[in-house]
Length: 225
Image (cartoon, rainbow, N blue to C red; front, side):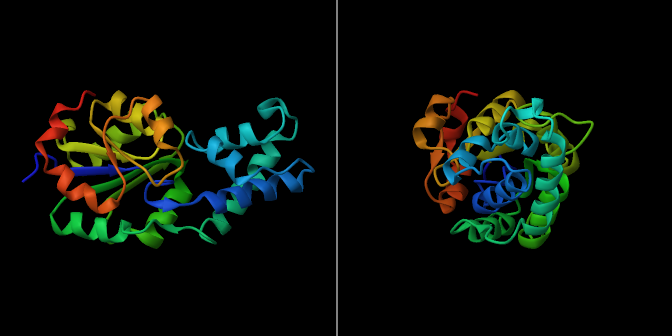
């Protein structure tokens, strides 16, 4: 049996392909305020640090734009309604979660997506498997600070030594490092292999069903955090 009892997942780009819905809500808000729309590739580059940062990058002149707050509010209102229009789990994700749950792993989601959307998407897709879902909220620092991951650990009753993090981005690599736990980086998400390598990623999977065997492998212990 693995020494790991707990797997903490990022959400967007790791469990769910949310990019098209994010792009659509970004462009709804931008067009509402007569701002130029963004491409899917631009939105891919903008995601990872929460929706406020996403909109700061998407809106011309960012937070200094006098319409920033109204545009951001329109994005949030639209996305809460349309967060599941085209979103869905990546291939084999549901098989992975089922397998991990059957092997008695404790599972959590920690996302920089704001908490209402995080919990709604968890309810729609993963509530049979995932014990804790934490999103961005006031009073706790978002990733790459370790705070939300540490909160998940507290809620699950898991120690640092028992936990491993799974994510798709440079933010996830930094989050795991700041928390002091290993990170499995996935190849199917919002960052390329080259981008992940540049961020310091050292452990990769190209299919979700590689993760159960990897959790039991001694080689994880040799990965430098």
